[in-house]
Image 1: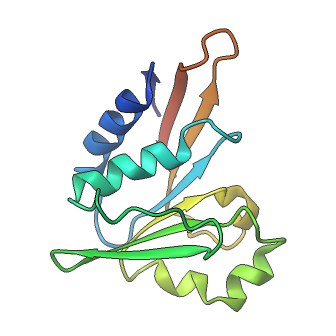
Image 2: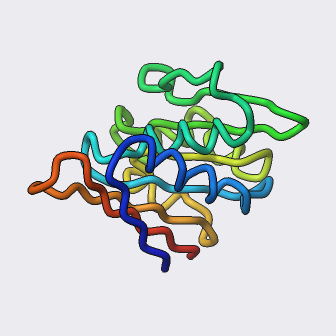
Length: 140
């Protein structure tokens, strides 16, 4: 497990860009943490690495946004509004896993659907320092 300390949104994006260098089609990245802990900023950093910074939009109401760059599909899910795993199955969510790189915010909601091999990124806020985040990255 790797541990990173971020003191700003810019640092969170920088960590994500470095992380993105190692990603391949078929990677599923599960982002967990409280509201405002950095999940979306991290996702923005990954998308920036792929040159998609001008196309970023939040999937909060659409569940998934799809991006394509240089033949690589990137799927950004926000499953916060799903009530359970059955809703993820209903949208065919698991069919995306081997078609590209999947970033799933609030992935713990669908934990039983996730592939056994995935990358867990956990965010923790520091209540004493408003902008400080601890970011843990673990390949499972």
